[in-house]
Image 1: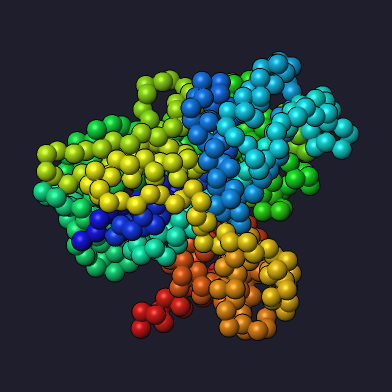
Image 2: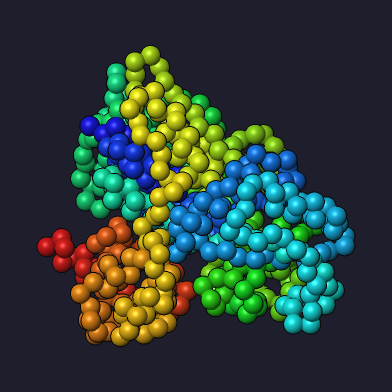
Length: 491
């Protein structure tokens, strides 16, 4: 019998699992695909307060997000890094005084000890922006590897005793006096198991409302609005370590963010999406939109042929019956279903990457009446796996035989867990096949044994971002190796 079981393995589900398991609750989680395979892995990779939310008077959300930004920078320093953002002034759009007021609020709505404040900036001839953009502002936020941030929370939950079931679909739920029974089915073997839990959390993101009536035996208490956000990846538009926030005449903003050392990540769009979240994809109008905004600002013109990859995700926003998707709140709502002596259900509606820890605190607060001896949360100060002090320079001293670029890449993914990944190896040859860009056989083994990776896509797109660096032949070699390992383990 679990104390708490969570359906959904995105950032909210894994964050709740980590908090609950740290407090000593017997915790389980089922994700129908891979961790972070939907919304949480298709974000803009930002840990930020949400500067543009101030225009919609979301002061509470921005304050919460800014406070969390500081906490998360210390909680996962190997995955979350400070970044300076530049806003070029466009005279026909938001005036300088308005942006200055917004940045002043952004600097002061919450305590800021790690990141520097905003400043004005003049763009010189070396700027990647077109000559007409001469003035602007600069402020601080942070960027992250969203897939590995989800994974780190799952690893934390597992380290505290939680059971994490990936590629496992919840196909039936029954509610009883004091507990739930769930039927879980493996996507691989179709094997079914039945588990019991005292409390249940629906953290299925864009499927949250749909789960009611199909799996959960009750009517959905709220509806979500599915909004598609799409991104494109192109060769780097600048070799400087700055991100850019570009204003558009539709009052939206588009980010150009340095990505993986060689690329620029451009996004995002806001488009209502009525379809199945797993089938979401960018369309031509979104591509044209992102290209048009970028080409209006940057000297280096980009075309469709320059796009290396695209990705899209469905944001599960609160359905507020607002016409403009951009104006819909990015805050979350927790709906607690409790009827007499029947077991409770908490459903997560909305939310954003930056505030996942606060959301988990809210879930645990809602469930505290069922666990009167529940321990206090430690998530504000505990460090996620890989986040202990361990620089890549120290890793270089410990593994001087490892090629430096490969070691830096490994450290960016695993932080202080690098010695765990390289355990037993004393030479490069010990790491096995080099599939390219610092991805060795031993790391793939580690990700399959310790990080729930089951497919080449899990490894190439979520555990690493090697798909951006490896050609088709190298990616096929990874796929062949993964299949070989799975066949050996199944024998």
